[in-house]
Length: 462
RNA sequence: GUGGGUGUAGCUCAGUCAGGUUAGAGCAUCGGAUUGUGGUUCCGAGGGUCGUGGGUUCGAGUCCCAUCAUUCACCCCA
Image 1 (cartoon, rainbow, N blue to C red):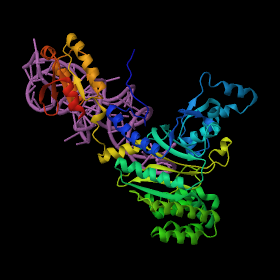
Image 2 (cartoon, helix red, strand yellow; image 1 turned 180 degrees about the vertical axis):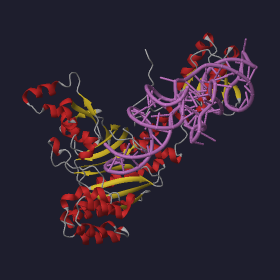
Image 3 (cartoon, rainbow, N blue to C red; image 1 turned 90 degrees about the vertical axis):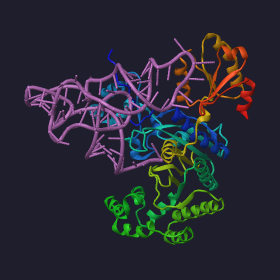
Image 4 (cartoon, chains in turn blue, brown; image 1 turned 30 degrees about the vertical axis):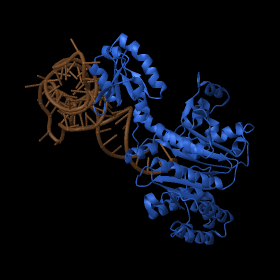
């Protein structure tokens, strides 16, 4: 049989031990913070019914869904369609039309929509407000590039069944807490969909809100001129674009921004509401002495179209890798699954991008604790038998320890310990067995001592 | 979906512009110097359909075409 070159799909990655230790470091911090704020974990399946996923992420999102081919004879439905519908030929040739016939399941695109589905399905077991966190991979059929993968992990925290803005405040605290512990200096950008709706309303283009927000979202990246160009292209009137200018250029401190905004949006009920909400959130945040900077950013839009209130996005200062955390309030995500009037708010940490940031900043701590601390050299059968009980005692004392499984040459065993960065090697041969003593080699200093097992354990723990 | 870059040893790459014996280096691996001592040093070994297919040529890793993979950017997004 011809051998094949091993490979994995593009945009996916293997994680080797060093990487896993570091990834777990990130996950552990995030998990601890989540739990500290009273959130509990859930998990949902990697695949969902396509009907659960489709239409929740906008047109672009639908395109980026990984679809799973039906099992068995997946063309059967097309054939039976043929007998009653003469247009079946066109179905077979049109991917979009064909898809629903041959695929009913898809890989989840994010954790929020499956969560909404979960909440509706389990509504009778859940006490509201329901605070959950969820750390799992998601998949997007995107073209991979820097900081963008087709399989990546999201760490979601959401609270559903409460309208209080305290929740928004708490989520910002969580962001601050997590990035502080990870040693990442972050900037938290806050906006509100209601403000954006208000703006669209005021300039008389309420129905074009998506186009408007998508365009001004790019302000920082492509500049004002290009934004206006894109707005024009999307069919926004010249007059509206002109009206928009002072709004997206709004300068000054929060204290000055808010009155100006209120003045501009006073004719729009929803806009005013958005400003008031944001003011309230900001007022709370001011009292909390956060380490991160937070700011009102009217150009922040976020692509997902289920957001209805506050929207939040976090970027790492000095590292250009896109957002490392984002989220917002969604008032009616559960409505589509038959549970209306339940509002939720949540954020999602992008673990993979956080990893990339920490790596670039060289901010990972020494990870020696997670690996083996003591290794026994294996001299042969008799020595093995003698060492195994000692090994157990060391492990019982809470020390990570192992014995080299084969009686290989010393050189081989020592280099194994060396590459695994094991700090202590214990040698027990005939002499040591006779004297009931250990020879312990410190691999960092090269120093070697003879010592009793009990002494070694005591020294180690102290 | 659109545009650019790159494919040579397990990994990082040189060699490609100007075609010419047997395609190189570093790192990694394995063996030895050293039969109870790693990380340093020295010696040695294994490892290549030069992404794939076709073309030009006396001759192609090198030039041409196609194709695949990968990567960066756009769209969009964590």
